Image 1 (tube, rainbow, N blue to C red):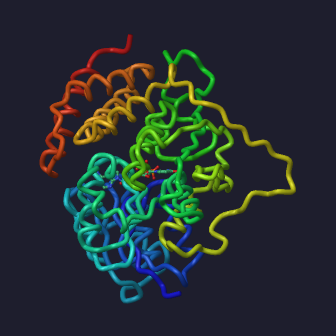
Image 2: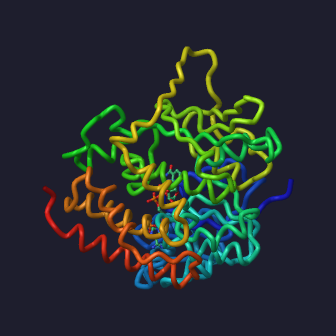
Image 3: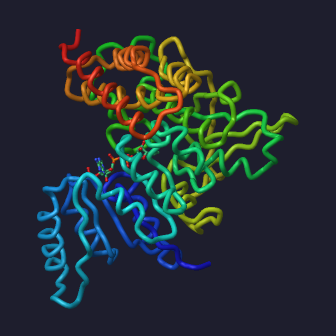
Length: 394
Ligand SMILES: NC(=O)c1ccc[n+]([C@@H]2O[C@H](COP(=O)([O-])OP(=O)(O)OC[C@H]3O[C@@H](n4cnc5c(N)ncnc54)[C@H](OP(=O)(O)O)[C@@H]3O)[C@@H](O)[C@H]2O)c1
């Protein structure tokens, strides 16, 4: 097995830092050549760059470039390095920096940025012919038909889609009857009224420790809806053959049902390092990437239907995905604004999905959009969602 050169987009986040854990544990398999992030945590980014000895570092905030350089020298000093004992990486800065980094020479790009701002880097990596380990589902959802021509280059990192990809190795494509996505149900499973929920309550996910946006999306179940669209786009299975089932223990990450009545499930304790390692090493597994299920301990795995009357997000995403074109892009963009409005106290938790639905219904649909049209629709949806969330929560 040769060592793979890796570029990490979003290296300072939850998935990004866990990807670095994976690389640290398997230095014979992976070498990080470039990292990039938004610019909110330059000290961490600089420490990562020094530790990994990368060739290039990218920051989206142009104004963070100087701070990054200073932080890099400070990190070198803190580790007792003198000049000549470390190489200063090239720094790319500005709104296109991560897109440039995504096309940097390497074997695999991990896109672990948050939000549809990841779309241009996703397309740049794919157009450059790289294997794309994709955690940033928003770029696939927003880009839809722009990204799917490259689906053979994409390896999913979302635990559910990694599970589906693993289960799909168990039969021929024509033998697949259904994809079954599992959902933890989030912190409000079993509730019949979602009004008045606070950000602190919504940020406390029962099984996964993730970044703030994906955690809120998990609480509204928008995350599961985005994953439904992601599954359709990645595996090209029609929406009426993709189910969602609630599995609170988050040990079975998803399942594939075959035409003979057999169902294959992928199970492992909730730990993103497993799908990240598989995303970087695909199709080969990385030994010891995560702990397996402990079969010496008693355990119960339960499955229950999703309460769609309370959690309308999956049905909304199913409708938007079926409409296609720019509908998923509008949905995702509006949702990003609504999540921020909720975190800022301008929108009630229960109003997030309804507000997103209103923006999707009003948006000027393009059936076969170009990248420019997708970006225009996103801009429109963000602006409309901002208007709708200006008022105080009721
Ligand atoms: N966390 C999980 O367990 C998990 C599981 C499955 C899928 N995912 C998906 O993986 C993606 C990342 O999630 P996360 O939980 O790791 O998020 P996170 O902890 O919030 O980290 C986001 C990363 O993206 C960077 N970033 C944010 N805005 C950026 C911009 N405008 N330009 C460039 N970089 C930017 C951040 O940099 P700064 O540090 O500079 O802000 C950070 O490195 C999301 O699409 C999420 O849905 C996450």
